[in-house]
Length: 293
Ligand SMILES: Cc1cc2nc3c(=O)[nH]c(=O)nc-3n(C[C@H](O)[C@H](O)[C@H](O)COP(=O)(O)OP(=O)(O)OC[C@H]3O[C@@H](n4cnc5c(N)ncnc54)[C@H](O)[C@@H]3O)c2cc1C
Image (cartoon, rainbow, N blue to C red; front, side, top):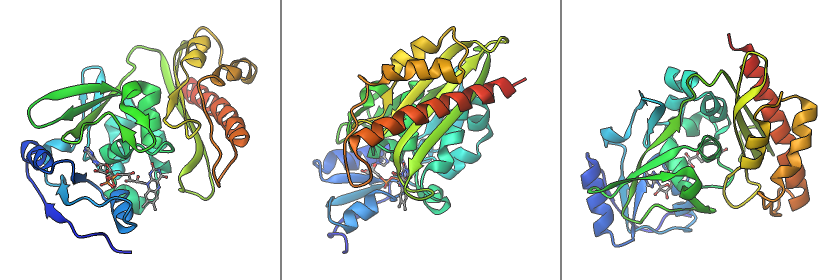
């Protein structure tokens, strides 16, 4: 099918872009990489009257260290984020997850902010943001606000962004001085690079004795939004993250997740995947942390 007719603008500033969104009366949509929006339009599942293309808004692109955070501009290409030395060094979990997001071709166009705003429950970038407790920044052109990842994702394809707001950046916390930091990312998908049936992400900081001092653990597609496993994180602190210790903690995820059944997997299979992928992601994070000098 072809998309329904729409108008198209390509502003050069954030203020201008937000002006178009405000004037659009709920019928205007941002287009970033177009990797999710264009298929939805082609299937006529969405019919925006106006597309506001943010690809020329320079202030939305770039990756920088800002104190104890790494700031990734919303319109930064996923491929650029994956190649960034800052991301590799300071947000190892994001670096590990990005190759799982679609294919080279989609990552060359798709943006970090587009994936977050789209809020697919299986999305890897949203999972990393939830696990690390990232902060989104949004603007309506006049006022900026910050939204914790825990409050950002509301339901499948639904966030707390207002219709006139543009996601401007995502701020990932860096763990300086937390010890030796390592990340783990695991997912099951029908084919390589397909959307995750279930995915798990973990980042650990270990001390010199291999004891966990800080933990971030979350799962995707085991509930309508990515779920941070806070009880497992807390229970990991002070433990050596070996197979036996982690297996003992896995039941703690049961009340946090809400797996559903679809044509890819039943709820019970998803629950089983969430447990085993979480175990593997934590073990991988521990092994990677132990390799740090
Ligand atoms: C073949 C294929 C495979 C894929 N596989 C995966 C996968 O495995 N995992 C995965 O996570 N994704 C996957 N995707 C989706 C891909 O990652 C998209 O890039 C991403 O979901 C959306 O990013 P985008 O920049 O293309 O956004 P767009 O498609 O341009 O926009 C998506 C939505 O976000 C809104 N939006 C975009 N930017 C902003 C902003 N700054 N502020 C407010 N709203 C905004 C748009 O209005 C729209 O509603 C796949 C896509 C394809 C085509």
